[in-house]
Length: 74
Image (cartoon, rainbow, N blue to C red; front, top):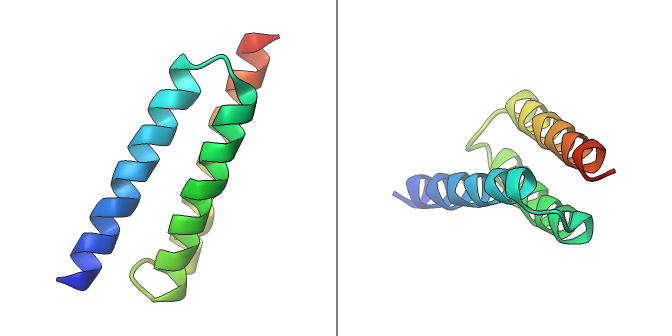
């Protein structure tokens, strides 16, 4: 039950970040949201809820979204 709650919270944070990275033009806000999201993913990996490679993959995807947002703004 606890794992389900934590996973759901992380998924919500990921969706919030992805939506912001696609729509917002404020790179600073996107980077702040990225740090928060990466922290949640790291916490899931540290407690064993998700595998560490899965966490690394998700974080890598999010950095790609940030880079795309930076390219779109410039």
